[in-house]
Amino acid sequence: MTKRRSIGGLVRILGPGFVSGAADNDPAGIATYTQAGAQFGYGQLWTALFALPLLIAVQEACARIGAVTGKGLAAVIKDKYSVGVVYAAVSIILITNTINIGADIGAMAEAMGLIVPIPFVVLVLATTFITLSLEIFSCYRVYAKYLKALSAIAFIYLLTALIVKEPWLKILRATFVPHIEISFAFLFIILGNIGTTIAPYLFFWETSQEAEEDKAAGRIARRGIVSISSRVMGDIKLDNAVGMITSQLITWSIIVVAATVLNRHGVTNLKTAADAAKALEPLVNSFPYAGVLAKLLFAIGLVSAGLLVVPVLAGSAAYALSETLNWEEGLNLKLKKAHGFYGIITLSTLIGLSINFVGVDPIKLLVYTSVLNGVAAVPLIFLIIRISRDRLVMGEHVSGKLSVVFTWLALGIMAAAALGALIALLPGR
Image 1: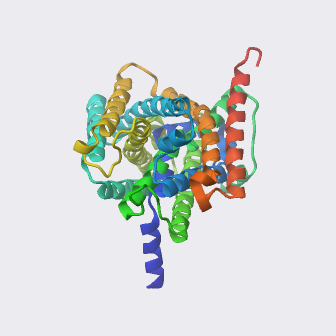
Image 2: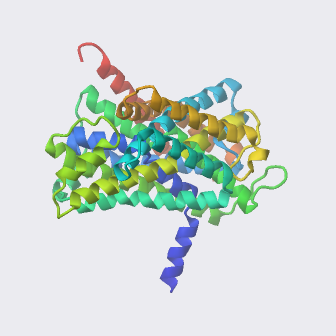
Image 3: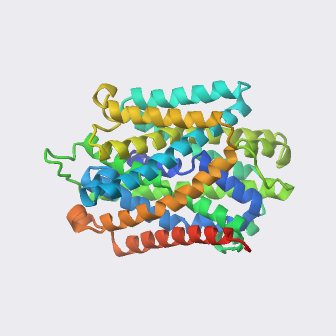
């Protein structure tokens, strides 16, 4: 009985951190990890493990900023820095998120087409309508439960890895022993891996969602002073750690499946996000109908990831711009009280939708978006480090030494990966 209660208690604790971890594996991420496995086999499997402490540190800093201040990241940056810094940060999130939304909607529609024989255009429009309706017209508590339920579906990718015959000793070695190739293609995909893992939209989303939790729990006083106990802060850290471990476990599973099935059979270049799921069917021979099951599971995971992350992308952009312009914002508010906030959600989603009708290669768009995220994250992590160490902002909840070491390490590695990719592009390389 005690065990049952403790498991139930853990489930109740899971919230913004768990959802952020699951949203980290959006269709852009799934496409990037699949391309990494298909192109380089197990060569980049180690990145899932090595990115974990960096991801935990950065996202925990964001969660702590939101919980302690009761504000979103853009609002806190605005309080501390010049208008130019704020607009630069918000511009990054608006551009990358809108592109991401378009790529993710297209990927979802492609994957749904493998499950139900409906034209692509109908699926794209239906997907957009469903995600917008849930985000705009459902109350925050219902919406949060919907996101948490979708987050759990991400474990489908682990199940897919388990139904495929795997060379486990080789996989374990590749997980713990880094492999590096000095080539543009290898460094480009590594930057994409890191960029889609430590992604700017998650910085804004988790910070704002912790602020939403403060409002829902009544922890914000009249003058905006937040009262937060050490127990609540411990719950936030646990929620964040579980979410990020889940994120990287799913990342690892996707690379394993792509390396084992696609790379081994010479499938090294994918044209659409759904190609990965489609390619699994004729190549998986673990047991009768294993290929069909693997294809279905991969496609369902892709769709559920999109349903989870498109609202997160649109929502994080809306929080960022609304906080910058002093508009009423928050998923806890009704449409009539936050026209601007929900307007940004609608506009960014519709612009993203339109990207699917301009003839852009969806798999390239997904991977390039991940790389763009990797470059954009560098200045944002710098601001997060500064804010999380500021006692005037954070009080007793400033980042500890270990957290600071890993956040600086995240910044340094992402900057180095971006520089490496640029150098590899130079003539003669």
